[in-house]
Length: 109
Image (cartoon, rainbow, N blue to C red):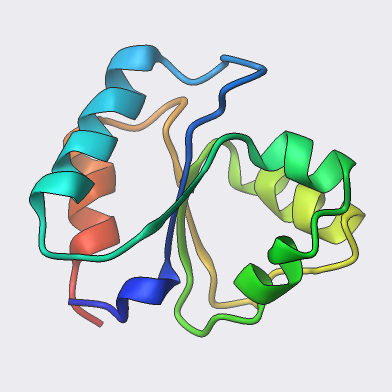
């Protein structure tokens, strides 16, 4: 399993553009696993407020993020002054299936 501190799950609480069923299923699979992960209510809000936690998140090696479009997530971190590393994996809960996202979040290596 990946280093647990490197899994980030965004609840997308304010824009509500991610289908609720997908969000709930991904979260359920993460909770049912033995992995430790961080969940945030909304990356968009964090970026708008330049939340300092984004800098700590961006510093993680092997980071895996379940959120929305990769380009948007990268833009949010950049806007907040904490660009993501090139190896960050961003999984799109707006377009991909929950089981595929959970599998990639929980995959080894």
